[in-house]
Structure formats: C-alpha cells, structure tokens
Image (tube, rainbow, N blue to C red):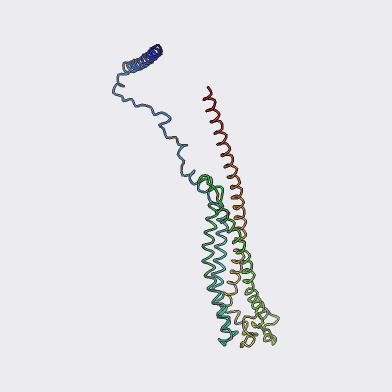
Length: 328
C-alpha cells in the first residue's frame, strides 16, 4: 500500500507542476495580447525542432555524388583500356588497308603472272580475316579487364560495402594475369613481324631516293639501281619480272599505293607497340589486384577466426553467469 500511495503522490505533483507551467504560459500570452491588441489574430505555429528539420549536410548534393562516383573509377585500368583499343584499332585498320595495297603493287609491277603470287594472295587474305578476329577479341577482352578493374579496386569496395572474397574470384584474377602475360608475349611477336614490311618498304623508298639524288639523276648508272623483291621471299624466284630498276622503280615510288602502304605499315607497327605497352600495363594492374584479393582473403580468415573466438568467449561468460545464478 505504501509504494502505491507514494506513486500516486508523485503523479499528482507532476500534474500540478504541468498545470502551473501551462497557466504561466497562458498568462504571458494574455499579457502580450493586452500590450499589443493587433496581435490577437496572429496565428502561432510551432517551431520545428532540429529533428524535424532536414540538415543540408545530411543529404549529399550533386558535387558529393560526382566525387563519390569518380572515386570508384579505376583510372589505371581505364587508361590501359583506351591505349589497348587505340593500338588494336590502328594495327587492324591500317594493317588491313596496307596489305591490300601491297598485293596491288605486287600484281602490277613485280609479279604479272597470277600463279606466281597465288600463295601470297591467300596468305594475305587469311591475315585480313585474322585481323577481324583480333579486333573483335580485344574489344571484348578490354571490356572484361576494365570490368575486372572496377570490381577489384579498393575504391569500388568502399562504395558498395564490404564483401567476402572467394576462391573462385581469386582464381579468375589469376587466370587473367596468366592470359594477359601470354597475349603480351604474342603481341611482342606481332610487333616484330609488323616491322618486316616497314623494313622492306623503307629499302625501296631509300633506293628511290638514291635514284632521285642529283649525283645519280640523269646518268647512265640509274638503270643499274634495282630492287629485287624475290630476295625477301614473298614471291618465288621464277616470278617475272621480280626485279625493277631505274625510272620504273622511281615511278612505283611515286604511286599512291606505295605512299599509302608505306605509311600505313608504319602506323600499324606503332599500333602494335602501343598494344604491347597496354598489355604490360594491364599485367601490372592485374598483378596488384590479385595481390590485394590475396591479402583480403587472409584478412577475412583472420576476422572469421576472431569473430568465432569472441562468440565462444561470450558463450562461456553466459554459461558462467547462468551457473552463478543457479547457485544463488
């Protein structure tokens, strides 16, 4: 009975205090109306609290969203992808047109018999189809590597929350490292192979420059300056004529096919070199991502063990408390 009476007394005290506060507030409002009669029709609205107001710092603006999005971009993978696309595009596009121009020069000047360069024409046609496949493959492969860069960088993990790395993900990253290494070695061979036609066209161009020089121009020795394409092995030795000398060689150098093919082979060789640099760049990025995933897996295993030990410690403490309560 005594606790109930004390509780009732406390409630009555609180109610009386609230009534006093309300009456005092009403007195102040009445006093204000008596001093300022024009304020009776004024409507009072409750002042919103800080909890009801929307803080400008709580809602991120456009600038913060842009910074957050830009922070999740793997810039290294993006630069490597752009360089890879540019190199492959230059190699495939310029190489395809240059090969067609080379066939036209051989058919018109160095091998008039079709059967002599039939094998070369088939090989060049096959290389053009291979160029189509290379362009398609590296377009898809570059996109895959860029996506892999997005999902393995630490910036993206911070944006999308923590997630657990799996053995399958680490295996895929290791597979990309190995495949990029193999492709890099292959493109080194392509880069060296693309330098061969540049060397051939440079020899022909330098010979034409010798013919055009003032020391040999207009002399009888001009007709003795020749270029024999058969020594490069692209056409057989029985091909006719196979060798062009003097003014005929100078006319070949002045044709549009020779000029375009020579410069396009140079650009294709530069594109192959850019692709090699891009693959080396990709290899460094993938290696660092794989190392990051490996460290993340170790940290994940450590956190799992730590969480398991903490759970066991809590279970032991709860059991000990239960035993103490049972004894008391």
